[in-house]
Image (tube, rainbow, N blue to C red; front, side, top):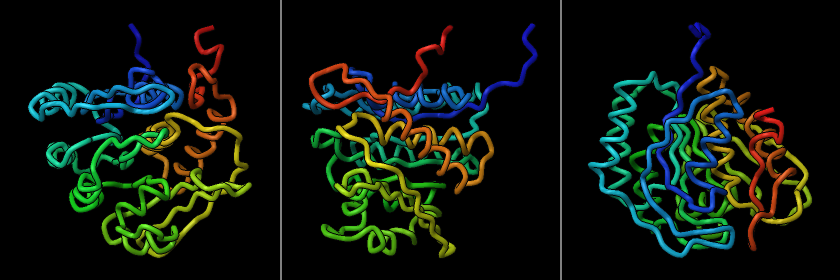
Length: 265
């Protein structure tokens, strides 16, 4: 009999990407790489590939609640990762799930746009997330365009968006990958007034699923017991490596390589 300790379980509430570059498959692979077990609960189905998203359907709330209930009543949840929700109703559904797990660290990735630019939810979904989910999250991980939507500051800087959003959340990580500077600046703001900037070299190319990879990795690091600042630093370093080693499997963006080639050797 295997008597080793169980891997931390991370409940992932997000959408399915049939190309496998983003969404729940990204969550599963990234969490495996952290030594965690992903429990993927599907919130939406998408029609997308490495180029862009063309359509999506949000699942019925009862189905999402049933999926989560099956997992929560069976597995010890050590972390939660939120990704694409797609509708205000799904925001409310997920909020009700989080209220059942009040002491579990939550990473909220406010997915509103695909990497190719296509919409994965109206701005109203972002506003609902800001009001109902950010207060329940441990760390929120928008890129700067998403932070501007959440903060309702179309041209806001990272600092300006943080000032508007920190009253809603404990920690805010605004990623800088959408800029064009030679160095990427990822900025972590905390409600206690502290801040940290993590820099890395900008890699050439565009990537599909980088935000999902970062958020799920961060949820895994928190589930393993790391403090938020250390978890963010480790998650950023891992994500950068997956982008450095990315594949261009399709006609569009590169897919992060989240598992090593010798993983099953």
